[in-house]
Image 1: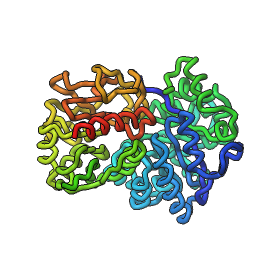
Image 2: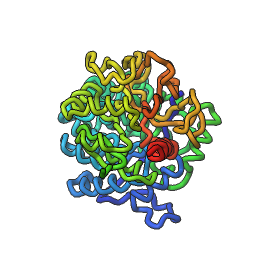
Image 3: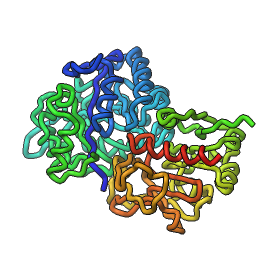
Image 4: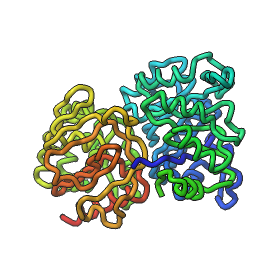
Length: 255
Length: 208
């Protein structure tokens, strides 16, 4: 039976991890390579690296990071942030990434999805969708945001999700703009609505504050994977603890 | 003869670094090549799996690699095929319209049935259906990382060495003489995946 995936997310800028300062036992907790190796040893199912600076220099740094990580870490690596062209995608994949995540570039130029899928295979094209609640509780709707959530596009998130899959997206990384950073749980309605609307796997992101939140996103939200940053970076929970918790509640996980 | 021990076939589909890194990690050196001559001279050959099966077949044909692969497998040269690499060993694939494949193993490759999430992406268990040195130190039902939308149906079930449940049973490991193939990616499957490469290369290089 396919297991549900637990994915720590490393926010990187200029080749350095932004969070993660609680790793006092690592020689250099700001080094994404060390942190990645640590999570690999701890049993993470995949890793996501997001370049939150998204500058050209940051992209070069990211290539170096991915090269080093792929020598030590033998689980899938997804890299996103600031990728604009097929050439950007190729560089990251050749550095050793298995998947790339695109958001803003896909909104402006949806053809990059089909071109990327054709060149490298759908399996490595992850579409990152930042969704923001638009109106009332009775009839929830979500809008796609770009530029790291700073700008709403007016595009309906569910329609956009379906369209990206039709164009060749192999997986969706769905972040709730409203829940992100709140630690009050994932947006379960959003997660479920998108999961049920598409045939590809959905990674839920944004809002994890405790292990019950992970469980809810996977079971109520029907997500295939959960992504979290601070609960792991600040060592509130280990990957082991997360998996033990889920397994005890009947969620299939890799151990 | 100056034989490069281990070669990884490069057919221009992108990320081969992970496979090479995995080989390095288990203590061997791999040469990446798109030259059939290098493949012919190698002691162990790895055919990685990236991209679509039809494109892979086209590239292998263009490189003059298909016949070399057929001959070497026939002669019993140690050969490890991964993911799409496994699929192109079969007679035909449904991917992108029916394509002829290498035909080393009789059978066809079909799309996963609708109703399932496609691709089949993530960690799933491999049930070992035979005892084989490839599995030395690898527990039965260990998890491996899958990502694929098509699956192989061998005609002769005796080549199946491992199966995986994804709503339907999937043939996830094929072993036939010195040919090994996995539908999952050992280079992305942590310690258990590395062990498979290590076991394969140990077998391959001890046979000299």
